[in-house]
Amino acid sequence: MHDDSLSPNPQGELMLRIVPMMADASANGDISGGWLVTQMDTAAGLMATRIARGRVTTMAIGEMSFVRPVRVGSIVCCYALLKQTGRSSLRVSIEVWCRMPEESQRRKVTEAEFTYVAIDEQRRIRPLPNGTQMA
Image (tube, rainbow, N blue to C red):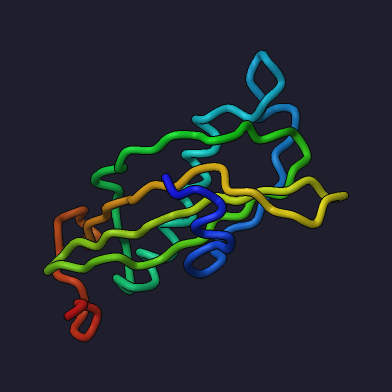
């Protein structure tokens, strides 16, 4: 996890912006980690699908820790950055930043790397299109 002072701005492309509601909260009133991981997987999957030019499936999620809670009504933003591609797989880094609507300063909540593999319509692994592999 990067400290906010080392990485004061999000890295990558904004892929998802969402406002969590009460139904997304835990019994303690904060947004649940599971809800946040779902948003991260959605954001990373959007980038992976675009790069793979078709279906992908999540293969792995790297280590993550939450540095601050997310409150109901906050603006949650997921930023994606392509880290690596292989023959049929790709790795996407996701950073989550949030702020309350009345605040101007956003704060980093968490980050993780998501690994996807490209699949065809029969759900079999397929190669990434030509030109999508990183050098």
